[in-house]
Amino acid sequence: MLLAVWLHGCPLAVAQFLQIEESVQYLTTHIDECGAEGTEDENQVTKGLMALVLAICLLYGDHSADKKNSLNMTVERRVGNEKIVELLEGVSRSEHYVRAAQRPQPLSKNAQEMLLDFQFTKLFKFLEGQIIKQLRPVGDASSAQMNGGSDNVVASFKELIKRQDETIATLNHQIKNLTADLAASKANEGIEAERELAKLKQEMAERCQIENDRKQAEQPHIEHFRSIAEQWQTEAHRYQQWAEQWQQYQIAQLPNAEEVVVQQLSAQVKQLEEQLTYGWQSFEVQGASLAQTSAQLVEANRKIHDLEVQLAAAMSNAATVEGARSSNQSELRNKGSDDEELASLKKEHEDLLVLLADQDAKISQYRQRLIQLGQTVTDEEDDGA
Image (cartoon, rainbow, N blue to C red):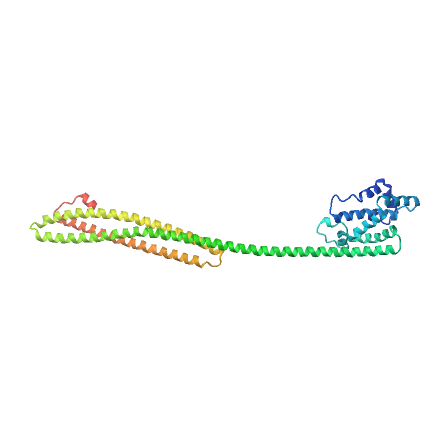
């Protein structure tokens, strides 16, 4: 393209170019051999530009008979005038030429599409007419050929428009496919979220069931400790009544009541001390059981907290989860039931402590009576009291 612009309208430049022996030989040799690289349309333009340079040399070369005939014969023999005309017409039919001739300002997306520009297409069109007039006889045939060239240009425009329509249709089809894929992807994400939520619900239900089973398994132990506490209270009350009745009876029946009372009181003190020791042991056992129950309640509260955290995570993935809310409320009700049981056990232990304190007070009273009756109470017995 640069050579064509440089040689156009300048016989001196043409003469300088033709003085290089390899110039014409290179053009005539490679005009049919190019095409190893590039697209078909690019090769067509390259061949046409080579033919244009040869034709410009014929137009503006030395017009002396010998040199002109020599150059004409060389071109005719190696390439052929019809071949040059065909190559020039091929350029005007190429996509690069049609795109460059549409707008003065280039709109190409990349450098490969900037093979020709608008100003060169105007020069090419002007030179094409002159070259065809010189290489073909003047007359009807020439006019018909020119008309054929115009038809070829129109056909090239139609072909370009057809390809653009096909490209637009392809892009529209791709847009539809991408839209469908996007909708399917959103649907799959929704289904996956629902599956994850259902899985979390199932896990929470299983954990709640495990907690309920554990509480049901611990319920017999709680009832057992409660029964033991009630039995102890009943036995202590009964022993207290027996002791009082027996004491009154002995005092009323025996002649030497003071000595008998002292012996009885000593025996009762010893018996009550044994019972008190047993009571404290039972209290320690029940205290350990209470501590274990409290630890289990703390663990249950921790698990409930974990379940509440998982429930919050599940509710962030879905707008409403009514089932999870009801499960959480059920867990809270179970927690309240455990708190009530613990409060009941604490109350029973407090009652037991009160009973033991009463027994301890009675023992102290018996010791005071022994002291008043003149009996000696050892320091060890005071410590036991």
